Length: 72
Image (cartoon, rainbow, N blue to C red):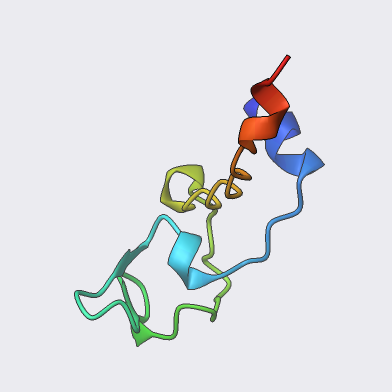
């Protein structure tokens, strides 16, 4: 069932989301167990998607309420 949920949304393959890679402290490269130091948007044949590494999108900003909306 887990595989079916992930297949509905197509995520671009990137070393940043691979289970073999870890983001470096400067956040400009990825430290890969298999390939070494690689670019975050790169990928290799051993790519395996890890959904826990994906950062959620920021929520949209809410509009400010106008005081006239609350008058009777």
